[in-house]
Image (tube, rainbow, N blue to C red; front, top):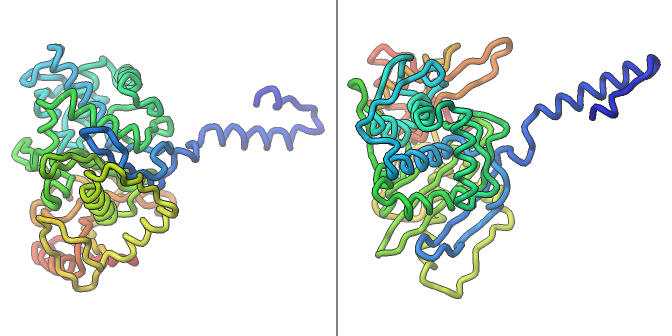
Length: 395
């Protein structure tokens, strides 16, 4: 690029414009890393691929990144570099991470066990970064260590730039690599894998529920991690065991929490149906983006029956939400959601950033509801003197 950017006075305006565009393009995220649908399902016992679509396409992992941070922590626990009751310091850098967070302060300490639980359940970025710094000295150095270890595990398409999964154009992975990581966690850290099934985590008199709804919704699921940033969509890695057989599923790019979860349920159902059919071909979707979009636009339909699956009121259909306010600071929206989430445990809390002209507003929403549930919840919140509005699927 720089060789091209030589100019005479006559060509200066045009060349400067072109060079500016090229320089700007170099700073923008690679389109190959953009949000989009990818999926893979593995037979965990044999490694056989049961389903795949764009499994090797680069995507943003979002908080699936924390699986690798936890793998590194489990490595350190296994070889004695860390202990579960060891207290680790919280740096200003860790405390300053954007939500989700548990509200750590600079100079505070927490145990390794609590940092692990905060990462698993709340997907807390502050606790996750503190854990990474305890292992690597700095988050930057830790990310380098993460990438090196990932490549050793066979995750050759993955690059980590941070411990948490917060937006970074250089942070990339694939559905196949995330399935490889889930399999490695199961096989190499069986003793610690059970953390991923933790239903809730209590910290400073606050209870944080696990974001992985499939732990309660799908028979046999015992982990492992959800992820979301705007650039990736809603991601999920899930592992389920039935009748002595285990499968691992990965979904990238869900259009909503419910769409992502419903898609995973369909994939797991199909996998268990054909896992013993050794001659069954790998299912490769031809038009997955279209099919996946249909899931989110047709959520009034009841998903394929799977036990146990609590029924929701069907009035109105679709995925409804309640909005409790819009704030100039993401931390304010997150704080409000922490206050109210126990009042509506079936909902998924979401801080949604929107461009409001000269400023960005952060909307505090509880999503994944039926119309009846959303309207009922909003009436209850209003009686408690909270601002609340019902958001339809078309809003």
